[in-house]
Length: 107
Image (cartoon, one colour):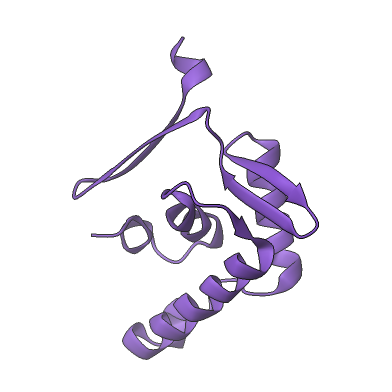
């Protein structure tokens, strides 16, 4: 079961779930993916569930920057703003769920 389905449609959790493959994504990529997920949730589970996913540009900026400030994401470019999972973050994604740990905390 995908991580986002376990914890529900929290924008920050869905962004993390998107980034676990270590690919770089622009804020526009993230925003497009959030809009896709919101539409999917609306079709499958109704608007009460889907309305919890923030797809606005300012919300995407907020969450990407906060995840960067806390060391979970790394900003790789400013123009366009591009992010990836911070190399300091260990990810285990399997059928049991998603585990995210910072390497520096383990040392």
